[in-house]
Image (cartoon, rainbow, N blue to C red):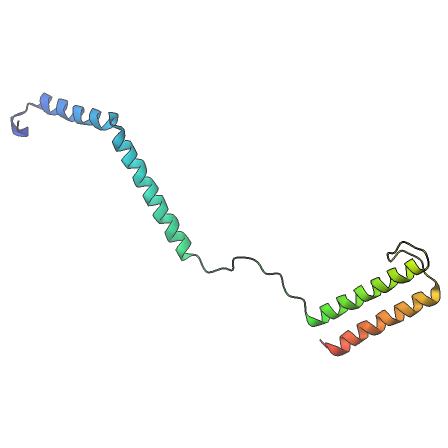
Length: 123
């Protein structure tokens, strides 16, 4: 049959039949969803490819040589204080009380170590 020989009612019935066929056929829904997934994937790839290059991880700022020297001086002081505390029968820690002469010696050595750091790594 040719479309020219159909009556308006027959044409309308044919259009409705085609519309029903498309609505009831799951292949059209699957193709539509597949098309949406492909478009979304393309957009995602495009957006990711246009992002500026950033490092994969955030790197913490590196300590300066002066900071590392001062940290070492502080650790040496704490270790010496703990050792002296244990010699005197304590359990360690900076809150441990040691004799005044030994505390003064350790404090002076710590101050000297810090001054050495400032001389070695001037800012």
